[in-house]
Image (cartoon, rainbow, N blue to C red; front, top):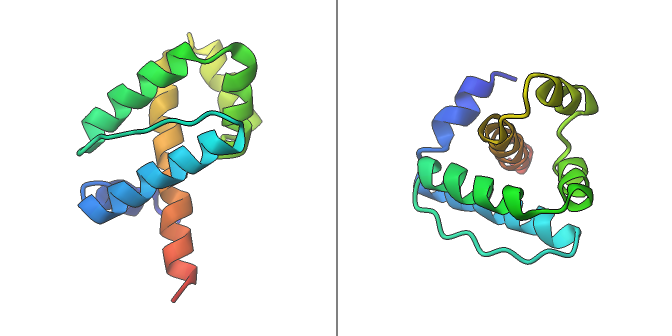
Length: 107
């Protein structure tokens, strides 16, 4: 699977909205209700980064588990300095991939 295709789809309004819905759904799975109102990818990255900063370490790890960011990627991110904007990007990419695959297999 070429992640470039998924990244390109994030500029499409409908695909971005579906990705936002998936992010909200995964937050709900850990008992946190969030309302994301981003209208483009840059806004989403900023909005999600702010939310992630506010999470307790336990909730952060639970969310990472639900999103399905691999343990190796998480460990790699932590050892590289833990820049939250990088991890936010990983989350959006993973959530977008979920949406993309769901749409592909629904055909």
